[in-house]
Amino acid sequence: MTDYVQVLTATETREQAMELARPVVAPRLAAGAQIIGPMISALWHQGEFRTGEKWQLLLKTRMDKYAELYSNASPLSHRASSTRKVQGRSATAVFSRRSNSPGWHGGSPDSSRAVNSS
Image 1 (cartoon, rainbow, N blue to C red):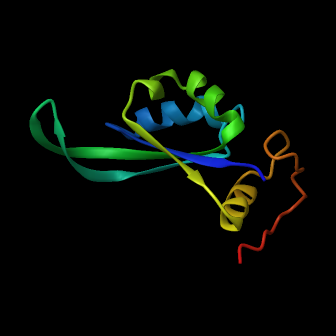
Image 2 (cartoon, rainbow, N blue to C red):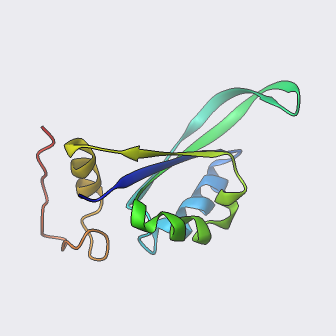
C-alpha cells in the first residue's frame, strides 16, 4: 500500500503560498495544494506574543516523492511546517480523486474517476 503524507505550512501572503505550491504541483511532486486564508494566527515568536494574518498551504504527496518535493520547494525547508502520514482507505480515495493524471499514481485521465471512500 502506498504511503501518503500531507505537508502543512503558513505564509504571510497568498502570493507566497502560490510561489511555494507551483514548483511542486506543476511537476507532479504533489497531487495538489490547497491555499486557505486569510486567517488569524496567534503565536509566540522570539519570546514575544504576536497575532497576524496568515495563509495556510496544504500539500498532498506520496512518501516516495516527499524528499524531492522539499528540494524543489527550497523556501519550504526554511519555514515552520508539519508533515503527517495519511492512512487507510480514505487516504487512498482522497489522493486518487485529486490526482487522476499520468505520472502521479499510474492512472490515465479516464481511469478511476470515482473512488468509493466508504
